[in-house]
Structure formats: C-alpha cells, structure tokens
Image (cartoon, rainbow, N blue to C red; front, side, top):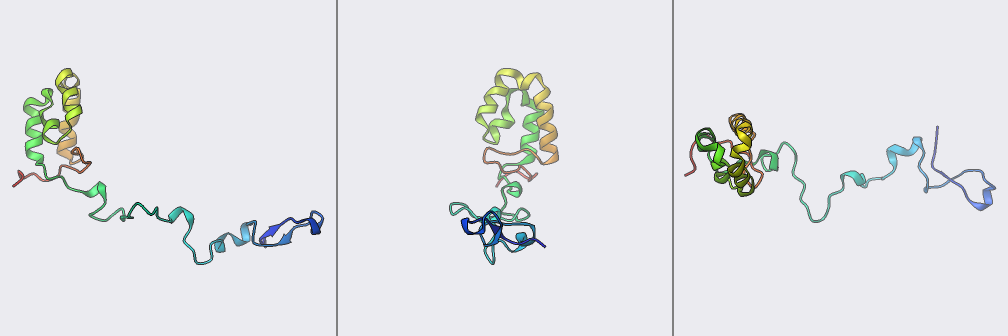
Length: 132
C-alpha cells in the first residue's frame, strides 16, 4: 500500500520511490538484516537476560537474612542491620533518627522477611543460613 518515498527537485513536489523516507508499508523491513537500534548493545556493557541468575535483580548477597532480621528486630533503631549489609550511610541515618522513629525499622523487617532487602552492592539478602 505505502512505499518508501522522498521528494526531489525533478519531481516538482511529487513523491518518488527512494530509501530515505519510511512509510507504513516498509516499516517491517527498515533494517534489512541489521538489529533494530533499540536492541543494539552498547559496546561498554554486556547484555544479561532478565531471567538469568547473573542478572543483578537475582544476584544473592553473601550476608545472612537471619542475622539481618535479628539485628533489625532487636537493635534496628540503631541501624545495626544496615551496617551489617554494608549500607553505612543509611545506617548512620537510622542511628541518628532511631530508624525514623521505628517506622523505617518495621519496613526493613518486612523487606528482610520478604527477601527484598538488598546489600550495599544491590544484591538481595536471601540466604537464611549465616555466611561461612
């Protein structure tokens, strides 16, 4: 139905077939064997499939979830669980605000129990057994 068209001086304003402008009929064949620019990889980064165990969202921390939850429950207001996983900055914030007056500690206990709490490297604290 539609095709690639462009305007040139010789056509007096009438579109002529050319490969410079894309119209709906040719949208499926724009890149002719080349990957779509949206999916091209940046040369500095390696692509990791989202469901791969190597993907950062699924990386496991070497810290223990049991130790983190016990620290959060007993001395969470002092930020001990955050210091344990390497989050020094927020550990100091928790220390001076008493875990945001207890609300932040409750949120952290829920996150740790659910397996969503992350260490300073962005890896999830998932293992219940203490590190060996």
